[in-house]
Length: 481
Image (cartoon, rainbow, N blue to C red):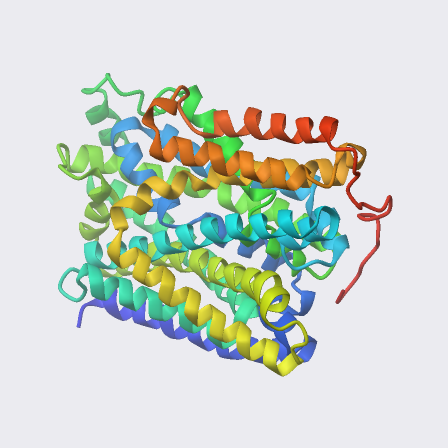
């Protein structure tokens, strides 16, 4: 049995051990669905920080960044800088207000102030985003295990192993398990990437050798933080990440689970600082791969190739760190989807008077069902999923509604959510199915003006004000809401 595989298995055992321990914490606070899906609204600052960091740092933030850096240089790391900016901006602007509302989902806010139609469109949009991104985590996890342990895993068995870990952690301990497992995940990410980078540089004769070799390829601005990717794409990354972080269910649910509003704010800011360096560490692997393995047919193998060249112990730690990044994203996404279904679909359209025990049982069943759906989706239409990732730009409509609701409620009308969300879905559909609509470099550059225009138009034409109390976001909540 290989040393890297043993290290990965030890990491998995640690995750499941933490998950079992987290069930005791959930019972201490609120043993029902709120304990399972929102950790009894009792998460401290440190756990909030690692939750948001764990959600941000997934396959795209490590393997994907290294792939881009292989041909574009260190600027690829700005992808994670954009995520960091999103977490910090969200912490500074909206999380206190979200936490003071004591709600469970973004569509719940829509239903509260804009009616059932806006809520229904909202939950459909949020579930499409959640399920798509969750499916990508299975693909990324399978790819990582296959690339780095090819004698043990095929792509399919790698995806299955990844799914078992995701689902197991989510089902056993819920949001507390997600939070505590992310403490381990973030440590593994940093230990793995830092140790891997140090030894990878030694493997190629030191950093001076890296620079010397890259000087032979002056066509790429290897160490320029902007030029390799370009301003247009970097700005798009920042706009997308700040936008989605303020309204994507899996992102804002972390604030709903915080002990209080101040804890939520501190956690998001700290989480952003944790996220920031990871992209540049991953980009460094891509740059090293450009020196060590020039001419790769598949640049996605840049990071795995470098890792496989390391000694077995370091390779095992780095592999665990990469896989940890994937696990940390998926668990939060699964629980976010379950929260949407149980609160905004099941309790609204199926059965509203659930007992606490029934709600907890159905929450676990829904996690399992969503897991199966996302696994099947990942197994059958992998290629399409990569394209659908632009669906994150759909969060523009949600963010516009959230910001106006919180800071300019006088402009909000009953139909504002319906108009804005419909406009956002229409733009995304056009971008996916009508290539001639690609008049800008990224759909986010269309989503913002169109959705903002739709919101303002509804504000002018609709005479019925949204039901937003003046003190809706000023309630001071501490502890369990």
